[in-house]
Length: 115
Image 1 (cartoon, helix red, strand yellow):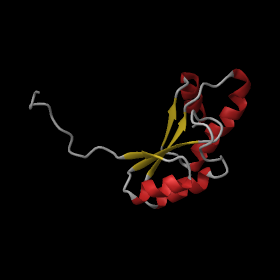
Image 2 (cartoon, one colour):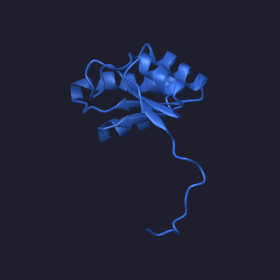
Image 3 (cartoon, helix red, strand yellow):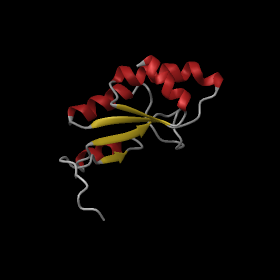
Image 4 (cartoon, helix red, strand yellow):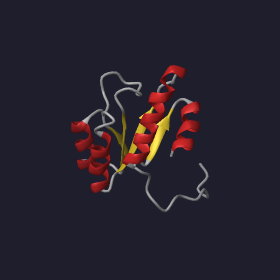
């Protein structure tokens, strides 16, 4: 290994998943720098995630403890879902999410237009 490669001056960010409130609180208490989580409709994991209505409370909880919130939007979105996806992206931006993790490049473009 080459020892001349510069090392970053800051440690890596510790990011933890949260399926719902108990995991979110556990990640905060464990010292996570960031928590990633899905929403009930646009997530690849079945039967987990927060609702759009809960999202502002989630972000307040995280930011109140100095933790970043990354929302996963990791499903492919079909044409008939675009209107709902647009509403969800607007709600994510309004709630103050620090990042959106996407699978669908079309959603990445739509997120740029909305945010």
